[in-house]
Image (tube, rainbow, N blue to C red; front, side, top):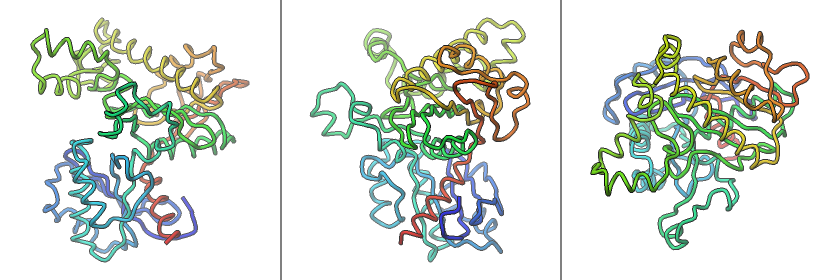
Length: 369
């Protein structure tokens, strides 16, 4: 994470109900960390003040899911930024308002500490026009800034940089697989994102824990017009009752799906097969976007902890040169190269560390200023 400025950065990551806080030193070491499972918002300062009691902080980095069309780089937190984030809350209604609440809360406790907003969408601002433009009326695209924004950018940025170190190929053609409750892929060449699976919203792309991923828009129109499904119910189903959960009847956690599959549950077996099928199909699509594949990166809860998913992916993408060593794959813990000897494509597992990427971006901002 070293970028020339040795500072302690408070990383603030707000979820739909939680608040994650960590303090990272200039060399990337986590000095302190906590998770407030039920954080009540901007007026709920007690957990924050308790965590920071006796802790030195030189700067603050806020994870913000959506930067809209304006913010394509990390940006200092000021009134204009907060006002803009409020204005685009509809683009990420579950995430951006909580990030703004975190900004307000931290500014109350640390009013004189410089703060930087780091955006998940910013990493994908480099997508070429043909990759981010939808085939919609051009006046719609212009009027409402409709485009493929992409998400999980902080994770993809860190994972591809770390994978380059592990594979000894920093400028390689990589497909980064962030596989967790939310899941997306990024096609990266020379460290630049050129395509991704999520789109205008995080609903697009892969089958996820509770989100549907890609669905024929005509099917959704049919459900509204002929199925009698109310708009709010459709929205709730696509976000919270689809994906692995909807297919398997479980919680949607892959571990529960695999347990059911092992017990002979046909719905769980199908859910797993659909997940892997779509994952492999989209990895191949990302490979086409960058003209080949040198490194396959696995990160996120599933990417890091499911040898079965990694093995299945390698088996189905053997034609691309992907192959994993069975023993290395099963034993992988933390950052690891699990490639088979002689494999044309390196397969590496990277522990998700958005906090390190945020701290790196904050330090770079301070250095530039």
